[in-house]
Length: 113
Image 1 (cartoon, rainbow, N blue to C red):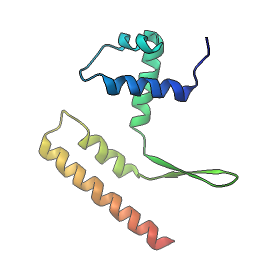
Image 2 (image 1 turned 135 degrees about the horizontal axis):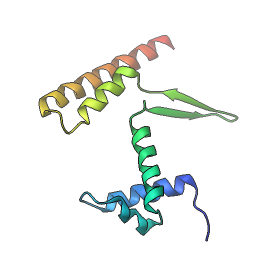
Image 3 (image 1 turned 60 degrees about the horizontal axis):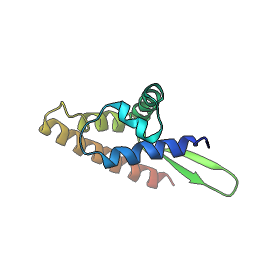
């Protein structure tokens, strides 16, 4: 059996999730070759990554530059508007704040260049 790379495993998880319309137990990930213990570790890693600031990779001929595209305030606002336990009004205002802060940050970065 050929061992899958981390990227192949992550893609398999997300492809499986896309196909399922309703909540499902993690044991269903056995269909893509992940035992419950491994699935739990992958899901914890995915949740951790989803809570981090977004990044962009800029690849040059010899190196890859990692650039944050969100600051702390962006992450906080994103967490609020993605939180289904919050009211729609609260989520809407957080989304507006997020977009406003993102646009302001991008404008400031363009002015500095």
